[in-house]
Image (cartoon, rainbow, N blue to C red; front, side, top):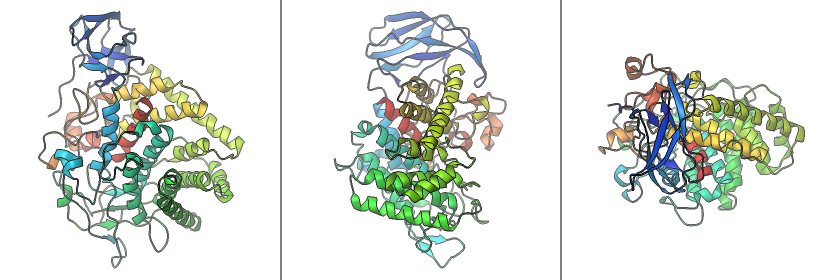
Length: 539
């Protein structure tokens, strides 16, 4: 069953740090609001809302209540004279710590190939899965023992491109905010020496290394069964034959990039692993140089699992060249990067398909002295993109940077990618201009949205409870696996449930908290990963 909509006041259900700007969104014309302390029952603030305005994405007239002046630790709610009331929320500097930990711990729950033990998984434990070697599609005499890694989403496929995006977000979070990862999760590998975020990423990276074709150095695009299992199938019960799909340029490009990045990040913790990442990256780069023109990946005829098709591999090559140059300092990679930078493609996106933003970020954050003119051009472009996002955020009724037409499949990834880009822009410019806007995107995720729902399982007073996630459906546990980011509103209404129940809704309201609505309520590793990055800034 879908949850009932909250009564009129949308707020971050986790709460606010003491010194941050604190706002809630109230439907209607507004007026007087009151902030009430849960412990004492007293009204600690009475104020007037801002001017109401029509919000195109939600289809509602809304206004803001600002209670930034209240900095006393405690639990609070908002009320209006019209009987509108918010969820309870906390003011305190640890408001986001538990959610940050859970968003990262979710990757452990996505693990494939090992038993998830009671010690670490609690009631969401399950047996080891998908351990049989995979058939190489098109060369059925060959098998690849590519066990491990993370299940990609609500199903059990494993895909190199999306995995590379997820690891990149997590490694960037660690590079930018190392102190955010000081606490153990814990994981089976926790050792007090290497941060758990790097242990978790390594689990995926080692799977990706198994996906590199030993013969050519190219990288197989994905590993799945021929079709998806039933919706309540537990991982260990998904026993159909596994197949690796053919090598693709996009998989090979982002593999080269993430391995070069990992060689740099892990060098101070495990020299042998870092050296293996570097060698794998260089082999993949050699394949890319030997295959300058490659058709985009399409699913083989018999395979109907997620395609992750991508016709353009320029952005993946650009990212790979940037990371290899930053890690090795070799001029050949710099020359390749500069040549690719002259081509026309989006150099600021952070998606699994459009990965140019990672190449730009790598080049701009590098300590190596590159081409200053190119760097300045990329820097200016990044800041221009950030300012465009900021302008949308400032006008949006709920403070996010999506235009109405951007509430697509996985709209929460765009919300979080945009927040990530705003924070990266501040870092590149040496400013703090965009942090407040990025935080509004987090407020949206945890309840300050037209539905008044927290899009993260297990967090907030009204979290998503029925994500499209097979383990959560099949494990017999009432609550879903915690810390999973739902895809969010999708005006495309691309599943049967959505077509029947969501037609005609405003873009930001086109969401259903039911397992059947995979086009609005699925979960994936690469929706969690930018959430980890953004929250890392605020913990």
